[in-house]
Image 1 (cartoon, rainbow over the protein chains, first blue to last red):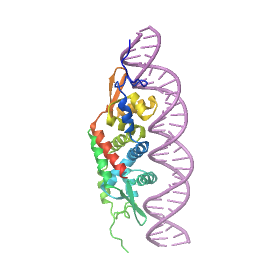
Image 2 (cartoon, rainbow over the protein chains, first blue to last red; image 1 turned 30 degrees about the vertical axis):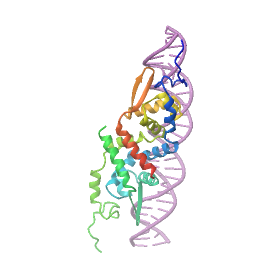
Image 3 (tube, rainbow over the protein chains, first blue to last red; image 1 turned 90 degrees about the vertical axis):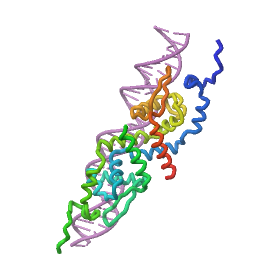
Image 4 (cartoon, each protein chain N blue to C red; image 1 turned 120 degrees about the horizontal axis):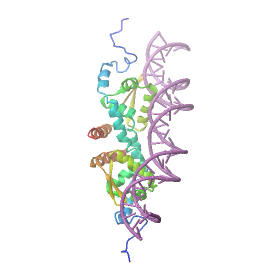
Length: 123
Length: 123
DNA sequence: ATAATATATGAATACTTGCTCATATGATAT
DNA sequence: ATATCATATGAGCAAGTATTCATATATTAT
């Protein structure tokens, strides 16, 4: 009753029969740092309020007040989220007198956003 | 001292001088439903663990155990996140005996994921 | 100077989320 | 049947997050 020679490291012999390339995959895995960075980037778009803000700014540069009207939300809430988006360099400010205008910081965002929008539509 | 005729609805006269197209933008705004849906989609990628899982599955179909090894995490935590991703139809299962293999449900995901990966790299 | 307006921000709070623990399920082997 | 292995899942908890409230800052007007 001799079993064939199998490198049996824990349970893995069952999974796929071989785990030799597991080490290889592990070596090619995304680094913790990048995983967090990428997750943080996606997180910026993972809130309905922020989605709406970006969607609005996709069309036109807008001041804070106009954004509160568009989203029908309190000024403070909007301001907080705009700061968040600004820290993420998704949005930029332009001050004119008392009012502050916000716009998308990078046209690249438009692509990513729209592509995902397309995707969610056909899901 | 007659002021020129300006539709002064609250403060908006200051912002851009005219808010006539604000109504237009509001009409073209993203619906609540879609905003939530889009946010939820992004949320799926907004956690380092899920990013790693997807990144791993981007290379190869893998069983739960192999994923716990790759991510160096508890089986339960991995299983919970896999369920999440499965509910989002980002990942699908294939059962072979006792072991369950996971893989990406949609090649579309690869595109979105990689594009964003590119973006975060040059940020 | 004071008042008014537009935005920003810190603190508090209600809500969400990701992990751990213990246990359940489902499959194979004996 | 029982035992074992791979995965799934509910409960509990700690950490994170989005909003509100009150207040601060900055700009313009008087």
